[in-house]
Length: 343
Image (cartoon, rainbow, N blue to C red; front, side, top):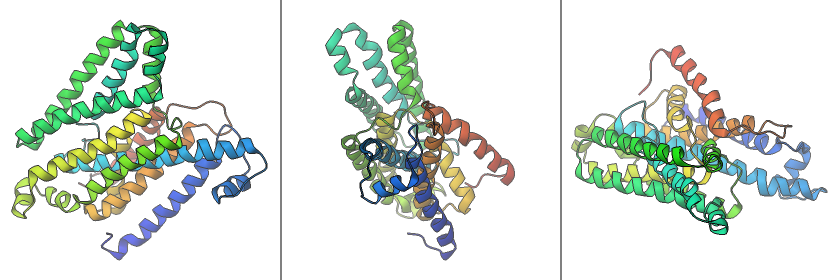
């Protein structure tokens, strides 16, 4: 996929950095575990303290894999949206997918107050929230696909997606106004985002959906390169605009929608990673950008998660806040340094 030898060294560096970030992320946490024991577990061995083994195998490793999937998925979906709309400010949630997921969760949590006791706690469980977020994002996706099939102008789809997002945000605000403080607090905690709530079973489902989104993206790389020069030029090269547009929207929905459903809304990553990758490699070729964005997104998400869990402390910061606080200044600094945006 990588077409030039000049990219081999940067990719090797990204791969090595990814391995280091995974090991550091698994090795650090609220419980101090010796590095030797961490490496023993990672190599498939067993250590004396069963509690440490359990923490590493059932909490830290799944959380690190979740960070990999979220970073890669949001990074790629951001790249897809920025190329499709030829807009550097487009992110993975520009079609209202995140807002749809938020609406589904808001209806579940803040609307469940009308139900009683055991039924309420069952519905607002982890799986109930994942299902609600998935249904919400799927509904918005369905509306966007219907619109995309009828509208020829890509920018019109962007505006309609933003309008869908505004409508869902307004409904969430109304629900919040009439909701009890307890339900409102539960919804706010979900909106903070969390990478540590997935079991191995959840992780398998999440990974399958992300893999499907990545696969769809692979088949769209040629069309993405052509779209950089405009839809008319892409059409002259034999690219089926409508078919590829729907494929790109579907891939974005799978990648961004699944991430939001399983870990909550995560800001910054999808918007910034494509720009950081372009600055690093100085290219717009998607056969190079795509694997680089996957690696870069995973690395940055791991770094943000390592910072968020405040090693050697019982406290943990909201991952959604950390991704913005850490990432936004980096992007500003890079853009000021470069003085122009590669796009």
